[in-house]
Image (cartoon, rainbow, N blue to C red; front, side):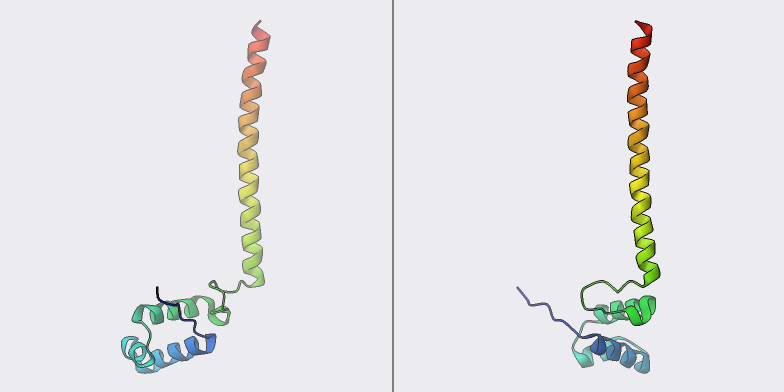
Amino acid sequence: MTKKKNYTATFKRNAIQLAEEKGNVAQPAREIGIGVQMLHRWKREHKKFKNNSFPGHGSPKLTDEGKEIARLKKELREAKLEAEILKKAISIFSKSDGKNLGS
């Protein structure tokens, strides 16, 4: 089993800068000893998250807005689930009330 290498945020930013200066990704990737796909992934992440890229624990740091959006999405999922449960409960109780009324 190969050990996963960890690269610092500074290393990644320098690699991206080198690729931009050279105008391609393949040559700088070879020069610094990383895979071309890895450098492409770093470039995409840096383009998408700017200064929040490469926090050191897998996923980019969320901004305050990003945290709020994530919280609201979770809250919406929970509200939708509650509404679905209530609909099913109403349906069940409506059926049982109809049977009792007919007797």
